[in-house]
Length: 316
Image (tube, rainbow, N blue to C red; front, side, top):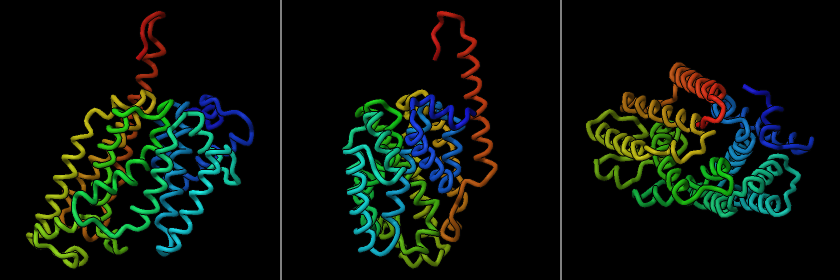
């Protein structure tokens, strides 16, 4: 793995202040989400890493503000943050080193600003005011308003000029699956926090009450509901087939690893059954390490194959 300094240089990021800004953003990701940071550093092409680190740091910043405090505090803080982001994107400068790094990344990669504004609007409405979903249509609206643009303010930086419609649609399918798996894996914690992320209409279909879920009642109806939800998540995961071809080559090992870990977590939820109402279902330790080791070996193999290609032969 190249040093962070070498990684910054590979991305063409120069100047002490700007390099410090990207370092600040990367450290924020490392503190908050060490696993995704490690995957990025180990598997992504070095020229992409600083952009993606800044994007992930920005996404996390907005997410944290949208989920912290009372509804009125969230609204006020998001409005203030939106003003700071807009100023940074317009001027290229900010008192906040994270916003300076992100504004530079958006400009350098020419990410369309509408993804950023759409994400901020969704944070202030769909996320900050979240009170569950009445039906599947509400879940899809949540994805369109918040989760999808939230992924693209981060992953969209892999593309110079931003994602084209086909690429954006591919990440829309990806986030549909990712959100379903995440909601199922975090059922216990979300219910403890007063959040019900399964559409209420589907509880009604199975004659299950919110209290049944909150009290982790092991009944045929609850088991049937959870089995139906995991089947929906599995179908959504299957629909992400082809996402690797839509990712930039330098991010494909990361995308493959994310998809494999998502499938592993969903399998763990399926096995847990009603226990998913009593404890959040994580990745564990062994499976992510095995997945990362395999991906790292494959990435090294591709690098060696490329470096040994005869002169004049194409390199994939």
